[in-house]
Length: 441
Image (cartoon, rainbow, N blue to C red):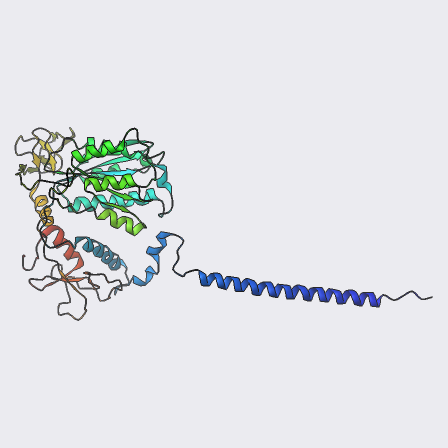
């Protein structure tokens, strides 16, 4: 008898395999359709403008605002951005406001472990040092009669990083070494404020006493009652301003509000710089509207005794200076006691006379008597193709980022003589000459 054939078995197996594969294909198709539908629903629910980090907002399509000049260079675009930001800060009210032009400021930097966070690129610490250097240069440029010191908050104590000085290079040198300022430990707000307050106890009453704090922590480790320190600052008429990088704390706002300062929380890198550079101009003096606030001042004016020194040339015989006891040839002689100092403005260590130069005094007056704002020219169809101050041609490329009071082509016009100047000359007029080079007003 012949053995049975397995064709039926094989056919059934092959049919079952085909049906199984078809079932998998149908299941896979249904799953892919449901997955695609779910992704579409998620994309619909997700807004398009959501950004993972706040620092991305300042780089959104930033390449569209950059335009090359005729030579293919981007240098003019960079200079235009710098001039725009500087001019925006110079647009103050045209009315005269009583301000203190002799300022003494202590810059307090948070050097705790919280400054290593990367919510601001590259880190809070690196960005703070970068903005601090720019702030020092701009502050001394706008306040040539002022002096600045630097204090750090690290490991629960306050560290003196730089002494009070009127030379910006000394301040920049104090904050230039990153290894000595490496963040660690916790923040002690009370210790830092006490150290800054003690460094300003000897200052005269006619000068302003200010503390600017860059605070990146959410806690403060204080050895005592910080409200007592706040009362001492109010009695000493010290104005405290703060820029917070994390969030608002009640004690931080109390320190600023009760002493007459400013408080702000940085949202991103650009906002951080704006809040910091708002503290560059001298604060306006307030009348006796508060009971014992630091911003309250009397309405009576007092005369100040100043001396204009004699500058020694580099070929003069070397002699010791009274400020550093270094043997130098160049320097300045005090007009009262003939003591030699290295830099001005400063206070003579022998007789205590405030020594200033006439250009520094003249440059400080533009805060008290502001000039008329120049008119921003927005059209390329003008008669004069070159700048009246430097004779350089105006740019032919119109910028796409136009803000209020800022010319898209970098051209500004004197309201008296109707002469046009470029953005560089406009900054030079406001900061140095305090008058128009064409009409002298």
